[in-house]
Length: 242
Image 1: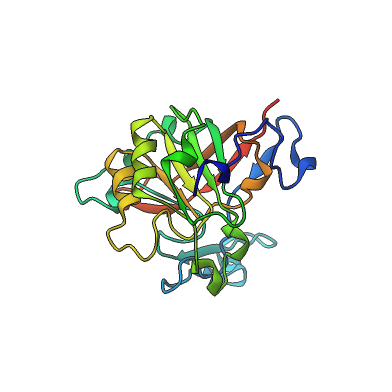
Image 2: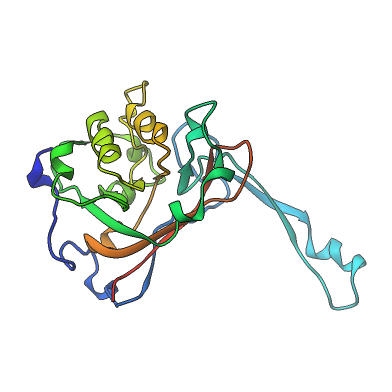
């Protein structure tokens, strides 16, 4: 990719749906989690079932009162999820160590990849943006293939040099709407390594980034506070400016 493959344009440039640009509106950026869904090819989908059915609960409550207690079994890498440093490093901080200030109401910088551009996002593609203290959201458009075998084919990714540039320029959080922040063919996973070594939260499998302006929105993606775990689904969303 070269610097022509991203769009540091005015606030409303590049919106997939300009009607969504209602000042202050919340924009959903997470995939729905469904039983059996495939997020990353080769990894198991979640199981969602009742621990206590409504019918079985009736014997515990007054007539006309019933509840369902659900149970879900899933790997952390399901749907739209966040990686903590522990995902990559045995001595890294787990999900319980991520402060709310690192994931809530961050200024969002959306870096757009144009159709036909090279798959790897390089420093030259990022240089036009002031990313310090921001959630840098890489809008590749790959999310339209989410849940299909094609999602993992010819996917966009952040190069090692691109990841290091974001670290050096003070990005607060990094997100992407693709199958992996890394080139899936590179088993060294250099982007994960650089970003998580710097203690920067990483959000993968975002969706709907085309509804955000290049700057001005505020991004939130909060993980569950779980000890001993490095990855968990999040509810990611943004508030449009205005």
